[in-house]
Image (cartoon, rainbow, N blue to C red):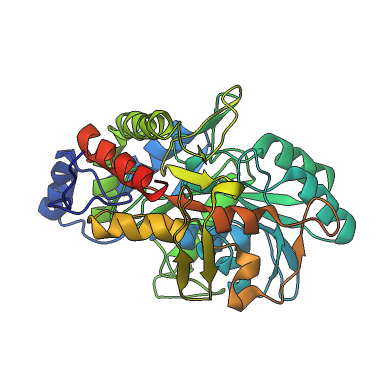
Length: 398
């Protein structure tokens, strides 16, 4: 198969636009509702609450802003430990630190690459006073959210579900973003649907939703002048951004179907290689397949060395490694990415506690990070382009 560099970049995941977005953006412009109030926000909150299955939704400037307000609603205090997913993007964890909390990282299970309920249960034995758990759904695959919620309830802990990457994914027929006491989704530019930015806080607690909405608009009191009795934030979603999200919602299921097709095409095309795709339990979970990832079998790994900022490898016949595959993809103008580096390995968090399922057990997250990578998963990628990506990966193992 003759492969030339792709004439346009094959992205990991970029926005897929349709046209309806312009209708709602134009409506905001023509009615002059260009700030943080307007019909687009109202309707986007309604669509989010109805789709996910929560009673209340609060439109915010980003998923990170939503997580920050969720942490505040959970009452995290300075110096207080909070259990957090270890394999995730830093935005899951940073809001805990904003409030002065101390993240305690929980290792992942191999079945989902998400927070291990067994490790979480052990963490409560080690730190029985913890009152808040923040769990993320990695790459659009649901964590064991039902098990984690039961553990939280048993220990009187508040569960925050970071569903930033998993809008549209389900566990036992229930939408992610509805399992926690407070839940978060993201409309960042690379997500399953986008507003270019923006996020949503979801909850069944009306008082919590009202407090989050107030905090997000600088905590202004109902007075004829600007009066404030508590700290506030400029976190409200723009009516313009909400117009983009409003137009995207009609295509959410279509986007998920496209991402699923990409995942399945990779799974079939790479079946004869010593690799596996990011896992999920098809009996209970249906991911949104936001990113397709692969994990190289241990015996098929060539020698790879990593520092905090660089990776090098030694090519070996019949073997490969993430650095080699990513280098190959980049040479042909395709974007890949290493798996999220675990939080307990990040320089900023290396002194924080980290809990595995068993004492002295080898961390699952470190192994996944060492052997895994994210593949081009853009919905605008054609089958022929994806076939070329598959062929490039096969060449790395030749």
